[in-house]
Length: 574
Image 1 (cartoon, rainbow, N blue to C red):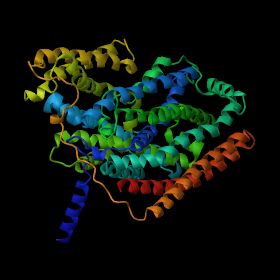
Image 2 (cartoon, one colour):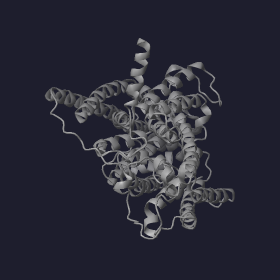
Image 3 (cartoon, rainbow, N blue to C red):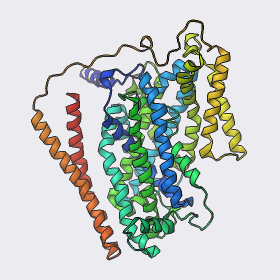
Image 4 (tube, rainbow, N blue to C red):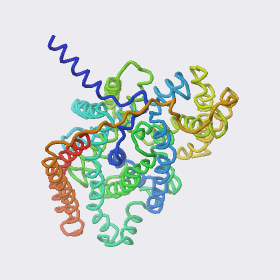
């Protein structure tokens, strides 16, 4: 009887992790901008940034391609969140998965969500695998180069990493954002200091020495990092527009595909989409540049081609054990929200299951997949195809939400007719995929550019077929934009709360822990500056000393920052 009561108590506590899985978010549950800044900075400073940053070097991109092309592409990504994803999310307060059900009908929603969840599971599994693979260096676990695991310790590591990821995903959006808020400042700093400590070696190899100004850094970047040719001396495989397009489509399913409606439904205003810049401009832009510098430095130090190095090897060469921690945590901060989205996606086809149970099942499957290292060997192709497969659904939702009222068509016409399947939406999706397949097979467009014609074709075909299929507005029916009050449940008002007791003591603890966390980050910077300023004088000894001692302020930061974050969450909850 006691065990039964304990089991019931655990289930009841998990069921309290309700996050408006099937209805609009209420006003009293909206989040401040800090949640979104932390979530995006944490999610988009990931272990794969080491891979992507180094890939631009091996593809032969030039320094202009990187500095200017990445800026343009990441700006377009931010604008996609600000102008498309966040406004729809704020107006509806729904996840894409439940809003699509109103538009596409139950059968189309099942097709989309099963596909979406499977792709999310692979992506989350990839992050778990990368994190687990980084542990092999300090603990002597051999590299996993086959499609199956060859060491039981690697499987155990994957299971432990997966358990942390699943628990955080079950905890919900606020816990994910809090975890990311602690990790993201240190993660971004690790990319910067890692690049800083390898610059003297790269400068010596080019005859420039330690760069003291932008012109010298540009010279080192041109000669030793982004040379405009492949490491073998061949012509570049990509150019300016490829780099810009990749930066834009890297998170295509999230912004133009509207998957991040799950995140922005908690935003107070659509302008909160600007917080995505914390991930794009600070994370992708700076992290990819720093990762390219670190990759070139690691290849020079180890006398190996950059293609022979994985994320763990690059990070460890520059940062020591702290680099391994960085790769592990970066994998966590990306796989956590990805697994959270997968759980939300599958709720549409498991309506009687609470979100925590769906996420748990998905997490177990994802962890099993992560035990097989093949999941990250074709990561970049997967990212491109993943966005291409899912973005038509975002185009269909955008068309019905914004274009239908302007064209005199009826929103949610399939729902009002009681259709199980919105066949114009399915055909429009199929037409978009057919265009992509044709352009790809005929080598007309590179994979990175395919989404533009696919998105346009899907929207146009859907508008035409929906108008012919029954979406024309009946006489006298209103077409006012926005979700009306009748379509959205009433919002709960925030209850007044008494002033918390012991506020002064909590304020002191929060202030002290915040100061200690900032001081620890400053110590990490000073250690790197010490190596950088000394230049090539006793460089090997200084780098070894830096790698050995960097872990001390790292651990101090995580202890202090966690205390600070817990206190902040307690203050907000009161």
